[in-house]
Image 1: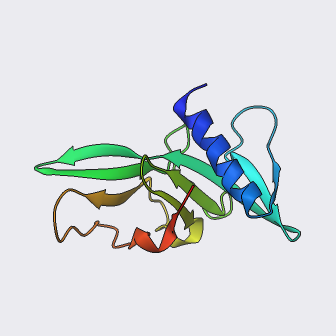
Image 2 (image 1 turned 45 degrees about the horizontal axis):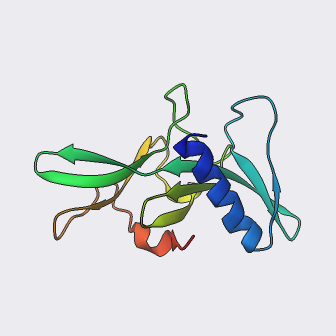
Length: 128
């Protein structure tokens, strides 16, 4: 099992603990890792794993929000990006991500850091 598979299972466990029923699509990559049904409402979940990048002297955490073909997701395909990090995870509504974005910056090793997309991701932090 690879890290992505483990993180999908962690995300499924998170939604099950919230009382959701979990359904997984069959037949390869469908653009959604699983569907969480809560009180009859289906939420299409895409799980992503946090990585790190360095730009000049700044090291920052980020998550790639692109499909296997490199294209961006849209809000019709995914309801929630569940981003799993080593210390912090995020439940980010897809419609909060600027259209066409292929990554989201999460934090950095410098004070006063402001991600270029301008999102404060702290409001979407969750505990696993």
